[in-house]
Image (cartoon, rainbow, N blue to C red; front, side, top):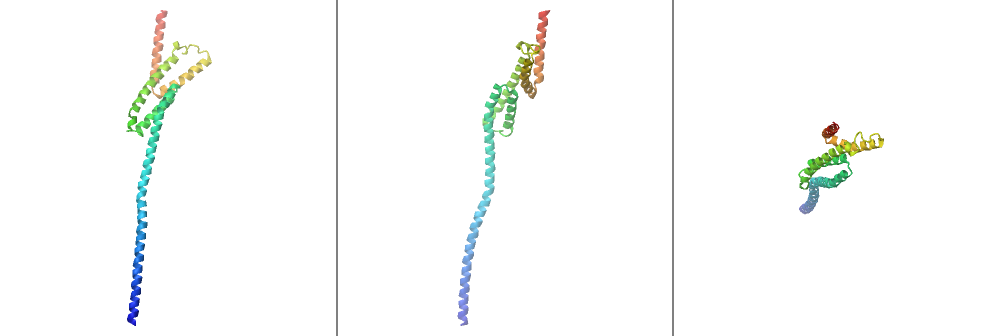
Length: 195
């Protein structure tokens, strides 16, 4: 009877061990599945963060490119409105963006040179306009109709943006020298005519 009791106990124990092994196997599979999902998610997270950062950089660059594309017509509109200072500031900002943040973008390789040429042309135009405004032959220069305060304030309003643009370009001294040379030539012509 002890033998049969021991055999029954051994069978129960074997069944319990078998059941425990099956439960352990189920637990291992469950833990493996959970681990796999967590590990895949954890491994994907840095990649997704990097992808998001790349998308942000791309969006910023494309946005800058669109802004640069819109700058050209805006510069032309400012020039048409004779807002030389605004045009110079926009050109300078555009050149800084092209040189720093959009360096190497092929579609903008020629734009920096075009902006430099536009700046040179604009500077020459401002000097020409400055001289034209201040030259007595134009009928608005100093000494001609300056008794009228309205004419004088109109002259000042016309000269202000030119002076600001010339100072910004650091060519005001050239404009003043050209004005001085013109006045000297006019004085020589007047002296020759009178003498």
